[in-house]
Image 1 (cartoon, helix red, strand yellow):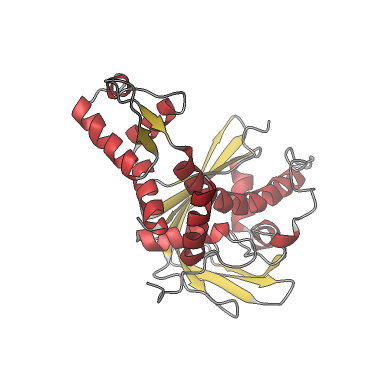
Image 2 (cartoon, chains in turn blue, purple):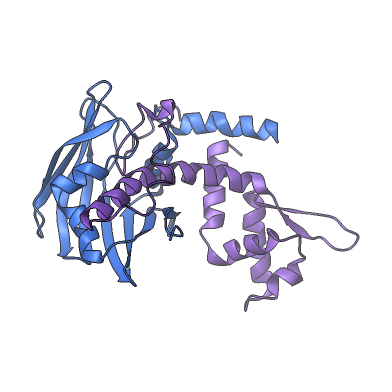
Length: 169
Length: 144
């Protein structure tokens, strides 16, 4: 029952990243958790220490969404917004995504096109999220932020880290 | 090669399924070019081209054993690349573990996987980390 407990991160091309994860729940329920603001606000929080005070979603083709995250520690905020391009209930959502730096800062270039797909088999639903950042640089920057433990892990830090590792080996 | 260029070379090398299969084979032990070409329905020159890309990314190295020049895996470049992705994956997992619990509640049963890590104390260093599924802060340009 725990074979699905880890998300898989795949780089299907040099400008995309795909995250795949299975859940022991029917597809319509996973869809509901992904599309109902009151539910999304409970789980789409990433690292601990953040809340999602704003979660507006006008879930229809051409409809807009706005998500805002706030740090419990220092009230800093940032957000994402975009527009729905495809809405196929319980199956597929395609939306644009732009970063709003708020008081947190940062920048994410030209945004991304996000495709969420749900498939169900034997009561297990697989959620696949494909993010197309249009360029390799933007994709790498987006994924590299996952390396941060507190502050942003920029390429500069990565540049420092790699020679250190090299001297160790 | 600059470290960031090296990471680029690593990802370029990993972006191809044949090269990943070659790495998977080499993870089980060193092998000659002919041995590596065997399971694939492509020519030896084509395999050599893949090997060159893997070498440039320092994912593999060439040994010297008499006339044989076996290829072997170099785990370090792979470790650097996987660390990069591993952090990103962890960040998603934190959200997904909450989703596991939530889906369990919605189905009126205890969540199946919550016990794994979600209940451990949060590492302190994470307290002020970036949240959200797709956080990013772009590298500040200017350092070249």
